[in-house]
Amino acid sequence: MLQRMLWIFPDRESTRTAAQWNAAFWSTYQEVAAELGLTWERTAPEAVTVDAVDPRSPRVYVDGRPVTPEDTLFVTSPYTLPYQAADTFNQFTLYAVLEQAGFYLPHPPWLAALGNDKMATLLFLRDAPIPPVPTVRISAGRDLLYDEFLTACEHLTYPAIVKPAGWAASRGINLAHDAHDVRGLLSLAQGGDTTLVFQPYLGRATRDYRIHMVDGKPHTTLVRIPGDGARYPQYSTGAKLHYSELPEELAGTVDYFTKKLPMPYFCVDFLHDGERFWLSEVEPDGAIMCPDRTDPEVVRQNRAIVRDRFLAYRDWHTRFLGGAL
Image 1 (tube, one colour):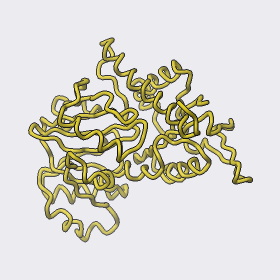
Image 2: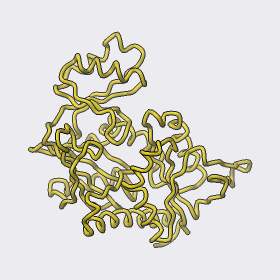
Image 3: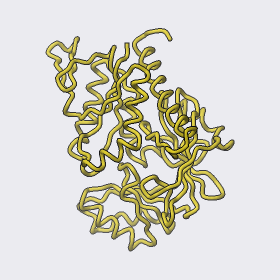
């Protein structure tokens, strides 16, 4: 019987950042899990050790305590911000180890790279009912000075939004007005061997619609509106958040994503430029943010998403082990 949910997360946050994310959603996750008789814990990749002297009966330990496929599941979405780079390879390989050891992983390892790279995500979903945002992907490597990347920019329109291909929390986003800006931003990215993606800028009025998908169905839609002076609608830039009814145009797309992404929980993000929707990205471990902690009804809805996500994890874990619901 499922007892604990362990989230593989590099233990490299600063004291202040850890406190910020704890207030934003981690503490809510832990509280709701406890209400369901479960635990939700963050686990560094190096905390997991495996004894496979007998490969037919591997034994897995977390911080020295044994865990089994019957009582534990692992959430395995990669986190690859620059200060987490040392953990990146260990994250990816550990997911494969845990899968081979028989654990249920709500986010399957085959999806890890697809979901982490924005270009890979959009190519995987190229036949989606709502078209992906047009995207150019460029790696800022050692031979950048030869300007060979310019060939890939021939059809790029300006201004263009520039993002790291695999970071999170809206970090590293900039605006390029011409090829000179592209060259300059790539030169900066070269310092960290960072791959960038370039997309047409949809304007300051762009809204982000996040659909929280639970057990194959749309659960709740979160709308993000750019904050004062911001160029894009994200929490980290002061975005204004509120829950909304699922737009009819998006409601017709959910079956596609359910079939494409057989998981108990994930988020699909769409951008609306004032005239039409664009597919932005998919996040298997999309954060469940509370738009307004002073409104009891909003808090109730926020916790309902978390609760139903964890209930779906428990149900899928039971099915994975061959049990009946």
